[in-house]
Image (cartoon, rainbow, N blue to C red):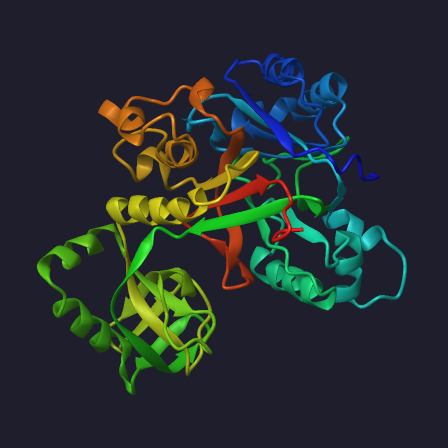
Length: 426
């Protein structure tokens, strides 16, 4: 779509409806955006699994009522709007974004095969994405049953590097169904049940990303000396299990208590750095141990020579990690809108109060609403209390950048913040 008046700043409206009927919920949520006066260039729609049978009708309602320049959406186990997280039951959450001075390009997995030409796969993907120096972000939503996401994300990174683009890719995997074909994806007037959908945003907007893995490093950095695929066999020329047990046994009692939330492995992404902080590790689950060989199985691929560190995930750690990252973002001007993608293993499954991640974002960017007041007694935040239009969903895998590369995560909260373009962020 062509760019619009670049003298305007981005604006947005978020809405949500928990009506049991999908079409009625879509009408209610769309009406709220229409009444706000925001005419969305991009409409993001997140629908609970209960509304998947009505997905095509929901798409029709949204396009008829709001006539968005682009429509992108996904089904999920739960949706987010304002400071509210609806983890169970029917709901629809919308984020309508007015993005003056931008070019939006929507595409899906089917579009890659449909474009003729003899380009190499990397060049074709870069062309489909519209990748270039002015690209600000790509939002990617995918069906986990039909998309090999671990193989796809490196292709996106290669395409971006090929086009000399440094824009982050952010998004998540549909979580609205437990069987193939049970999810829904929205791509303009198409309603799909497999593949991926995406939108690239280029031009006069700044997009900052936050990836909170919710884990903290514990113990020293270690060097893998023998590995095969997802198996770490030796660390420092010794059986991996023996080294890990040694590190755990040396921990103070309080740190050892954190391991009740699960022991993780963090792999350094950029080995060229002299020092590594919590944002330098890609955190993965330990999935098994073989006492006979001394090897550990991890949810990821490893090789000899890589630097790793044990990590602990715990509700307190996850909460403080997100707060620290949000504190850094709060030093800048308040965003015009936010997109929040949280793991479906977070929410009330991890924290002792509802709406944890959503309310944390509200507190960070609503200085007139003290965090102590918002969190008092664990009361839910009313959607109308959020100063920042924000919507999102609970994903079965969260997509976001770590150290300039794109990964699919677990137990993570990923956030995209849309701000007006400045001289520092053209």
